[in-house]
Structures are given as C-alpha cells and as structure tokens.
Image (cartoon, rainbow, N blue to C red):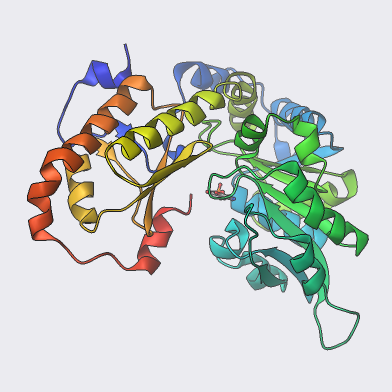
Length: 370
Ligand SMILES: Cc1ncc(COP(=O)(O)O)c(C=O)c1O
C-alpha cells in the first residue's frame, strides 16, 4: 500500500511534496546500507566506502578520479576554483545554477569573474556565443579559462549535439569545460545515451546524489587526476573535509544501484501530470522529472487549497514548478491530480472572487532554486 493510501486524507498533513526532488526521505534499505557502512577517516583517505563511491562514479563516467562533497554547490565551487585562478573568467548560461543560485561563490572566494551567455532555443549556450565571449590576450580583459554547462537545466535534457558544439569551441580556444550535472542521470535517462558519452563532453562533472537519486546528502565531482587533486585540497579549504563519511557514501552507492533505473518512472509521472493539467485547461509542460505549469492569477488560493489537501507545490516564479521523485508513487500523484481538479473545476470559482496580489518575482525565484 502506498504511503498516501496508508495515511489517508488528513487535512494539512503533507502527503505529496511536489516542491523538489531534494525532499525525499531515505528508505529503510538505504538507511540499512548507511548503518552497515565500513568507515574510516576520509580526510586521511581511509574511508573505504567513500573511496569505493568515488572510484565507482569515476569509472562509470570514464574519468580518472572522484571526490565526495557534502553539496553540489561546494562541488561546483571547488571545480571552478580548481580550473581557474584570481582574475580568470568563466563563461556560462545566464540561467545556470552556478550563476544564479550559488551566492556568487566563485567571485567572492576565488576572484573569478562570471560572464553570462544567452541560452539557445535548445536550452544550451551556442558555439557562436562562446566564441564571441572569449577574450583576446589583452591586459584590459579577464583571462577566459572555463566554460560551464548544465544538464539537465530547468528539467530539460540538452542533447549531446547541442552540448558538443559550444564545448568543442571552448576546447579549441584552450578553455576547460565543467558540467554541472546535478541531475546527470535524469539527463542520460531522457537522452538514452551512455553515461560516459555525456560525461566525455566535459573535463569535470559534478553529480548530486541528493536529488533524484534520493540520498540525504552528497555530491561527487569527477575528472582528471590532477584537477581532482586540486579540488580535494579546495574541499578541505572550504570546510568540506568530512571524517567517517562512509555513511554518506553508502547511501550514494545504494542509490547508484537502485535509484538510477527508476528515474524513468519519475519522467513518466511528470508527463502524466502535465497531461492531466492540460486536460483541465491549464498550460503545462513536462521536462524529465519536472512539470512547469502556468500559475493562476490567484496562486495563493491554489497553494492554500493544495495545502489543505496535503499537497505541497513549488513557488510561483512565474510558472509553478512541480517535481516528481521517488517518494511520489501513483496514489500520491492521483491525490495531487484530484486536488488540482477540485481547484480548477470547482474551488477556483469561489476563490477567484478574492484575488490576492501576485507575489514578488524575486522572492519566488528562490522557491525553484533546489
Ligand atoms: C543544477 C543544480 N546545480 C547545483 C545545485 C546545488 O546543489 P546543493 O543544493 O547540493 O548545493 C542544484 C541544487 O538544486 C542544482 O539544481
């Protein structure tokens, strides 16, 4: 029986949390794997489970080495700082997480300048915009050192061709390439490509274990041995050197074995949810595990209604983001769809008479940062 069916309909209790795939709870099997992990002091390089996770992911992605980080933000930051020095510049999509949601850490802590590029129609930055942004060797300019790509981005899986073009341009100009692959396996699942194929486009790849893969914590950076040695030093400097981190790594190894293959279910449920919303006359689109739906003018009324039904939804920024994940089964999704139906087919007509002001865009953007 599903968690939703077991709990029944209980007012404000959260039965289906669509805000993000970061909200998942480790299940009993993952907790058992964590409890049973063989551990050691990872700062000494003596945690066998961490060493195994780093080696397994590096090998799967065709890289020489891996380093476990507590978060994707720290993994991205260490990667950027391992590639760049003070006065260097990175090129990246204007909507990339590193630009928008990581507190400008590369600039604040590393003296690295961020040069935003527009996204092409396929969601990726174009070869032409990369070419146009690479600075000539002139003392007026920062030294363009790195191109950062992101896949998936806004839930969208970018095709290998779309990524190869800017990456090749960058490499020909002597730049390195970093991929923020927070949802790397959602991308490979959607593209149906080999993990090595996608990872091969970049020199370093950051992968989050705590999103669609469902672990409580952890990201792994993979790449060549020399860059990863620098990243390991930077991890210590940034306060990310952990001790018996095997309990985290064990969750990651468990997730790699059990939670990659099931991402296809999240993607199918996202499509089902988008179709159901379209059936209610609501503009909606699915992208891997995410659904972006047009917010009603009375977003707060929708949010309040969903909350009373035990359903949590993303912020209104200006679309509402809904994310499917391993803690949302068919029964929980059906409950969410029923709640949307009640709103759009009945409650909405009552709520609309008391229309609140739309929320400020700046605050709303934060809701979709995870
Ligand atoms: C694309 C992307 N990169 C990086 C991160 C940062 O991960 P963390 O929250 O573990 O710092 C996120 C988090 O949502 C993300 O969506």
